[in-house]
Image (cartoon, rainbow, N blue to C red; front, side, top):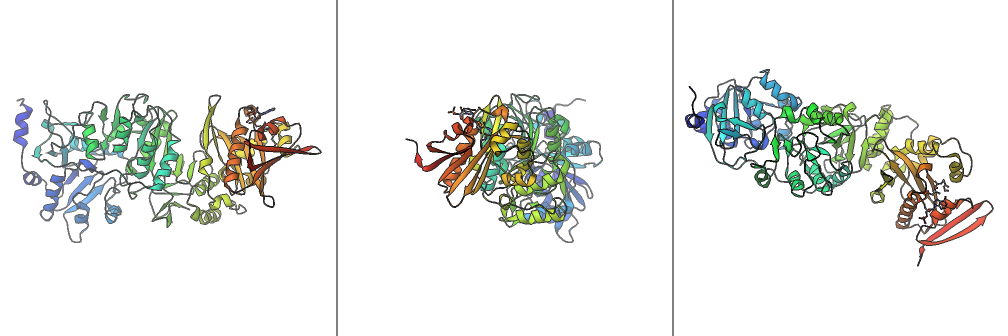
Length: 624
Ligand SMILES: CC(C)(COP(=O)(O)OP(=O)(O)OC[C@H]1O[C@@H](n2cnc3c(N)ncnc32)[C@H](O)[C@@H]1OP(=O)(O)O)[C@@H](O)C(=O)NCCC(=O)NCCS
């Protein structure tokens, strides 16, 4: 006999205590995830701890509104065992380190684990919005693995909470498909926006440069991702396909930055499997037709992620080693970094057309006492193998490890470590055989202050050129630039027909102290694979306090203003570094160099000495 769902609703209605009494000893009980946790039901379960035995609590992650882990940890208590697919979310640090409860798995695979009953769920405790006119109740802020648990559990107990937003998508459970209903009105768990942290802010600004208009992004919740979202406010037509929606994402929607127009998959929709944020975010999500919540076996499936155009995965790492292996767990203020979803997104983004995967890594922990870049990960779990890592960003810069040798990786990772740890990492790398024993650590690597403010980008002839001070990792590409110079340009630059540009010599161009010697390069191409098309250098002559400058611009880029930009940056830096002026030596026939020097806004004097003309200017003598 077909019965009207509303009658069934009334029949299933009971008190929380009565519902929880249905849980039998030895059963596996699923609890809805993170902010979707049915707090009322969980608190009743905890208060019955002494009456239940051997309950296996299973969940994705929990805010521990009721500290079940603490109860499970009590000596002699046989009530609970916890199986968590992600532990890092627990607020107190001692709870977060309860490794033994963790089941390592990619989140995309968890629904299958439930549905195929490899891990049968006896009871699912879920929280839903009140039923609509057709009897559908929304799982609201937590669809993730909760939908699969609700669909496969033997007994479903639903806490109906009028404060749970009704969020659209594959997020609904029908009244007919639950067994017991407990009405309880309480605020849904919220999480405040992360605080301002300087290092997070610097990482956010660097990562923003890697994200082009029209990209679709997955972004972990957390401090650095939050800073990144703030830094994205100048972008256009971004799309969202992510695990959790946050307040930062909502803000970019209201600013018109996120339109979801260019995703290539579910266009016009913000796709996620849950939300973590403030009440303001939950109000925004309620009945919003632009939102499409989907379970984790869709959102986290690498094949689905790969379908998006310009898919960019942005995750937070806990630590990395010099070979590129990644450990991930909860960081302070990054409780929800998507450890269990990390590999899903990294692999999906890597397969997407023009996709990128980016790891954010604050350089230190423990108030700067400990480097998060370590020689080799040995006491933490590797979550991402070294072969899967592409971009890595700390507050000291960004590198790409994709396609890089172990030697290149070691140099790259050392270059973005906190300067205080670079020497130690360098020595360890040599010991481990990652770097040759003859290699020296120069001042640039020791951590002289890299002058970020000299960085800029410009579109010329349809290509984006990046101008920035050289880094030790540039050695090979500067060497390639010199080898590719036109023969006559080699003579103009080096005053003879030089045919060899030995690593040792080139190291002096790339490994600099940024004060007494500075090199600025112009690069084209993707970060990590770019080539150097122009080099401008200054070297201080200390007795006169004047810096000698020299330039080389690849033939096809000459006459396009690159030299002018380089000399302006060198002059600006030299002036700021207390140097009195610039000098250049060139052949009298080198019209290009003479004209270039004269672009400086200072009085220029020229003096001839045989085949060489000396060009000189003092910063104290500006042009009128
Ligand atoms: C000389 C050199 C560095 C100039 O760089 P560039 O990027 O081509 O120069 P820009 O496009 O920025 O031009 C700068 C100014 O010089 C002028 N200029 C450039 N090349 C010129 C040439 N061959 N003849 C006359 N003027 C020239 C430009 O018109 C511009 O002046 P403007 O702004 O008043 O119009 C570059 O040509 C080069 O690398 N040459 C080979 C190596 C060399 O000679 N190095 C210098 C010795 S250290």
